Amino acid sequence: MTEHREIYKRLLYQLLEEILLLIIVLFIFVGIYVPVRSISKQITKSQENTIRITAPDGMPLYINGEKSSSSIDLILENGEYKTKDTKQPVKIKKRPDGSYDIEIKTQP
Image (cartoon, rainbow, N blue to C red; front, side, top):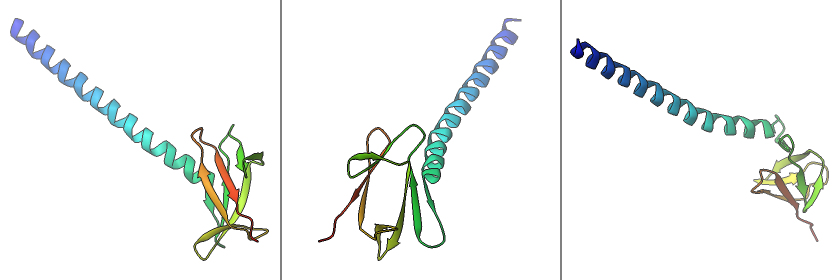
């Protein structure tokens, strides 16, 4: 009877080990999938090379260091992002808190 108990104990440990491995794999998958999904929601492209950057929920969008609206439209021209309305070049930085800082470069 003790042999059966040992066999059942080993099977239980193997099952628990596989369940733990499955949980770890799911956490890794969620850890990769969720940020990619949120980035794709934040930056959406339209057909005319226009990009709208939207601040994540609860995060402000900073333009030239000041809090601004929740989104900005940019256009891609000659490999450089520019504001859609004034065509000024911009530099996009992501802050450590997850918000975006968009620096609009003034042209002389």
